[in-house]
Amino acid sequence: MKFYLEWYGCTANKNDAEIAVSLLEKAGFTRIFDENNADFFVIFTCIVKGPTEEKIRYRIKKLSEYDKPVIVVGCMPKTYPERVRQLYDKISLVGPFDIDKIVDAVKNAINGKYVDFISSERMNKINVPHVRFNPVVEIVQISSGCLLDCTYCATKLSRGNLVSYSIEDIVKRVRNSLIDGVREIWITSQDNSVYGFDFGKDLADLINKISVFDERYFIRNGMMNPTFLGRYIDKLIEAYKNDHVFKFLHLCVQSGSDKVLCDMKRGYQAADFIRQVKTFRESIPELTLSTDIIVGYPTETESDFEETVKLIERIKPDIINLSKFWPRPLTEAYKLPQLPRKIIDERARVLHEIINEIKIRRNEKWIGWSGEIIVDEIGKNGTYMGRNSAYKPVVVKSDENLFGKFVEVEVVEAKSNYLIGQLV
Image 1 (cartoon, rainbow, N blue to C red):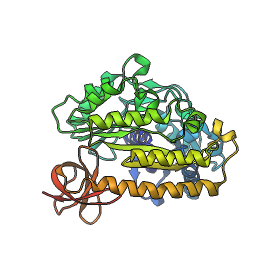
Image 2 (image 1 turned 60 degrees about the vertical axis):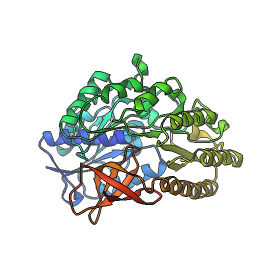
Image 3 (image 1 turned 90 degrees about the vertical axis):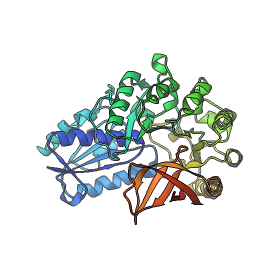
Image 4 (image 1 turned 45 degrees about the vertical axis):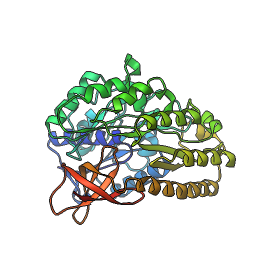
């Protein structure tokens, strides 16, 4: 039988989807990419943003028109099961810690029995078989859950508190993937900055252990929060200096207002974020900085918003993931009086213009740079995209198949979201 799969959300969710595909194919099912010919559907869900959830709900309703089983997986069935069940009568639910039960869920659904596998008992995802959606990239989930209790976050309701996977298991996973020919290791979780805190280690210890192999490869460190990073920032910077580590820092600030950060229960002040970025940049000048911003939190005033604008203009991140606040059911912020959408939209518009200007200026500094990139994506019309050591995306054109190769390029032009290079 054939199945069609969609996934939404974070990199960890993508890896969960890779695990599901492997388990289903091993059980004799075939993945296809045309929903019209599928015998059942698998959809991996995300609840971080309201619009994303609405898009997923719409897709479930559209898939239900085929009158075939739909297996809904991930954070949505774990946190909002009733909101999913009401969409369609041929749905089975699988939580984020129950991916290993997806074959059982499918077999039951095929026989007309729609069951739910939604538990809170963690499964170790390090040693579970998976199919790489990108043969060059190995996604490694290093932990599950986090140590924060942010007032706006529904993911915590799904993923719970921190449970880190062992360094030994992760090292083995990385070693085997490199033998398979992987060239990028993406370590990911809900918050990489707290990895190992539950057994007396930290992220720097892990990176030091997985950056020792002789193969040509890069490690991309995932999202972190400033709350706990200060405990070992110097140690982490030293780990980043290894040639195998992309000089890429994804550090979420969310707001430039200390009052809003306090209301969000983020556990740090804007000055902490500024200091940590400064420390990283002083040691690694070529660093690519990514951060996240939420505009329109219920208690955000115009003055608070201006503090965010000032922070962004001062720090000038290379990448800014801008989100309009959207109240998530069952969170503390959901109960607060909400700002008018018109105000949120306007603030987002203003900040979006500032962000675009910063991004193009940051990228223009790379014009004239020459060096090596690892090609990890195939584009259209003979184009490829690779990453340099700072994880800057560089688009090149070639008649030769460059996918998975290290090539020398020179950057000749800059766009807001990528660089354009020529092969040297």
